Image (tube, rainbow, N blue to C red; front, side):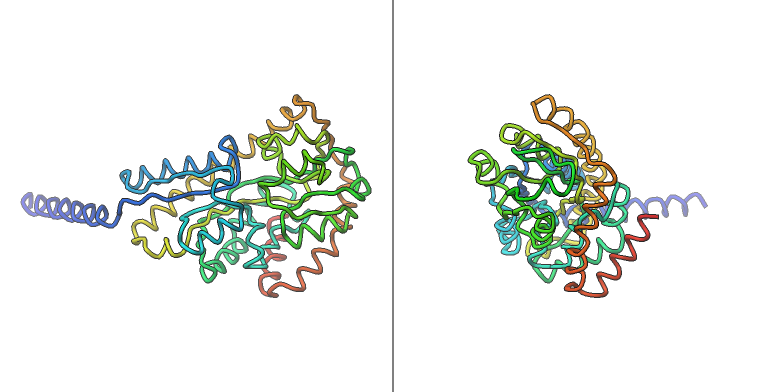
Length: 336
């Protein structure tokens, strides 16, 4: 009996060693260029660094990440093209930038859709987020999940925004995205689509009066130097999406893909936590830098929601009906 047990144990050990050896052979030495728009002190950068640590640990140091922050590899659309062409391995843009190739990503940009981080996470990590991700491979991209960017808020150099009418006539830089353009037109602002890398210079030169971004982005990019007023409009929840070039992805072994997914999933929770803590802290820091901060009353937020409703109705009618139904069903679920 003891001999049989010993043989079984030796056989298991041998199989385990073989599996480990095969697994190690499945992982090649690779360096992944990971580009994004944010500065190295921004929560997106912290997410990239954590992903890099996890990936290196899980691959025995064979899969390395080289980070290129602050638009070093170009703006969102330039990096998107680089991923599609296979000359860049990864990026983490706002989901907004994908609406040009998969228009249903515009659903994520619908104003006043979710009112809490819990609702946002449930919406993106659930069936809707996965249905949107499933549309990307045919466009040359693979997504490994969603990171937090935060609720977007308006800054400007003219006045506090306490009600929808305060946006009337303001030149506000927006992401080049149809939902954002129409939303700010509904508030009678003058939305100006512009790449993020050009924004600070445009604010400084007074080419635009203001912009809208999460608090951590406003702080990290020193917009307090060129805008006096920051208003907690919380008009839309913004997420980043972790993208991989499909041309690169298709070269990976099953083991490498598994490691990539595991590292991305583990980095996600950390990145969201860091991002939300940074947003909370950023408000006080922006005030300390001289910005005048104000919140909107629930009544004025509801007024803004009603003004923006025709925009969501218009775009919903132009998207794939099955995805729109899923979006509405999921919204009802997460709002409960």
